[in-house]
Length: 86
Image (cartoon, rainbow, N blue to C red; front, side, top):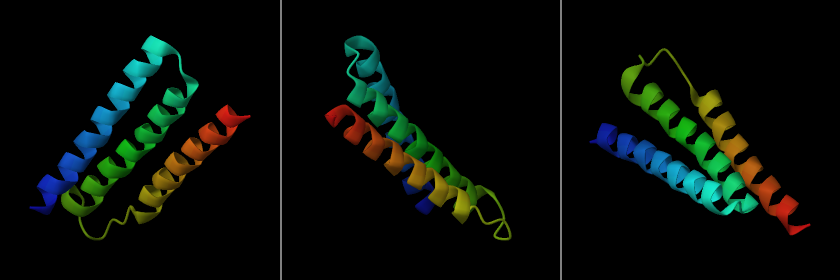
């Protein structure tokens, strides 16, 4: 059951990435660009979660890389929000 949930989360993040990127390309709104980049790293985070918890053996720990991807996602979104405000 966990495999299904992790996979659906990755697919949802990927779907959000694609939709945000398409909207950015259509409108040119820069906040959509930063949001798409955020979801790119959130998708990486979810894919790493699937690899870490489901596919790879327990001796391999991808926690650092998952947290790094999540931090990059939040930092990009925060940067985009601050940058576009100014």
